[in-house]
Length: 67
Image (cartoon, rainbow, N blue to C red; front, side, top):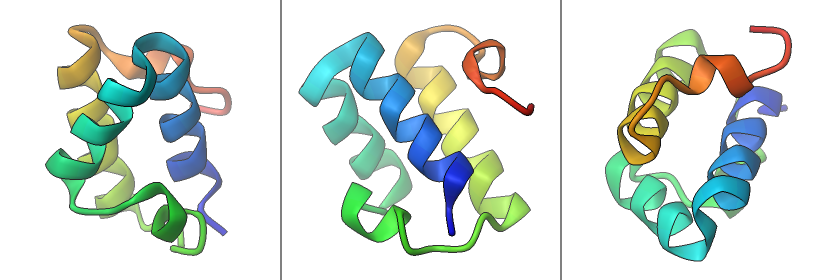
């Protein structure tokens, strides 16, 4: 399961709300409902981390557990 992707979605929602979540969908092309069933492929996780960091305006890595 996509633990990292779900964790990134949770962080974005906590920090930016629904608007940030929608921005993550647009930037990654992956809705939250689909992210939960995807494998944590390193390339996809990096894409999500890059998009989330852009949305937050800072590196999301500091908020991720098990970096």
